[in-house]
Amino acid sequence: MPARFSKVAVLFGGLSAEREVALRSGRTVINALLTAGYEVVELDLVERSQLLPWLIAQSPDVVFPVLHGRLGEDGVLQGLLEWLDIPFVGSGVMGSAIAMDKLRSKMIFKTSGVPTPDFVVVRSLADAQICQHQLCYPVFVKPVREGSSIGIGRADDQSEFMAAVRQALAFDTEVLVEQFVDGPEYTVAIVGTQVLPVIGLKPHARFYDYDAKYVSNETEYHLPSGLSAEQEVAVQAMSWLAFSALGCSGWGRVDLMLDGQGALQVLEVNTIPGMTDHSLVPKAASAFGWELPELMHKLLATVK
Image 1 (cartoon, rainbow, N blue to C red):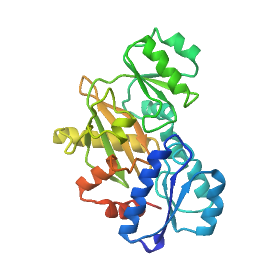
Image 2: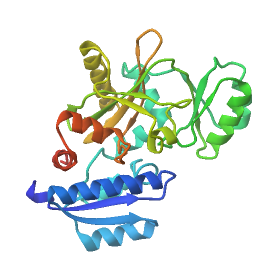
Image 3: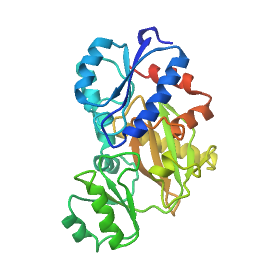
C-alpha cells in the first residue's frame, strides 16, 4: 500500500443523470478500498456547495472520483482538484473532457487512425428533419455528453429517428447520429499501461442499453472473449490507441465493435467506468488475477 495515499476520499453519487449508477459504483469502490486496508472518507455529492469545504476539512491524500457523467467525469472536477493540488485517480482535465464528448472524441479518432462508425450531428429537430432523408438506416442516436446509454435510441426508419432525436435532445443540445454497426460488441479495460482481457458482450435486447448494462441478468459476458489470439491482441492494441489518442490516463474502458467485414470500429472511451456488480472492469480485472482489493492498489498506483 503506497504510504502517501493512506487516506482516500471517495466522491460518488453526484448530480448527473447517472447518479444511481454512481451510487452503486461508489459503494463497490469504498468497500474494496476498506478491504485493501486504506482509510476511507466518503462523500455522496448532492450539491455543489458541499465539495470544497469538505475537501478542505478532510485533507485527503488522494481523491478517487466515482462520479459518472457531467460535473464528475467531464473535466470539471478534475480541474478543481488540480487547482487545489490534490492528487486523484483517473484522467486529467483534457482527457476527461474530450472522452465525455462523443462528437469531439470521434473527430480526434478520425485524425488519429482510429476507425469509428460514420456520423453526423444534429442540434435541433429542424436539423433532424433535413437529414432524416439522407441517412442509411438503421442508426443510433446519442446525446453527445451522456453515458450509461442514457438518452440513446436505435432508429430503423424516419419515424423512429425523429422520436429518438426528441428523446436525445432532452439530455443534450448536441446529438450524435451514428451509423449502425452490424456485428459483435467488445469492451476493454485499461489500468495504467496494462490492457486487460477483452470481454465479448451479447445483450438480449435491441441493443446494449441501460437495462442491459445495469439491470438485466440475461446479458451474456464472454470472458474469454471468443476471439482468436490474433484478434484479441488487435482489439487490445486498438483500445490502447483510442485511449491514448484522447489523452486519457490512469484507467478507463474502451467500447468497440467488429463490423460485417471484420473490421474494428471504436465507439467511445469511458474515463470513470462503472463499478457495479454488473460492471465490466471488475470482471476483466478478476480474469487477469486482480480481485477488487488488488485492483484498488493498482488504480492508486497510477496516480502521479
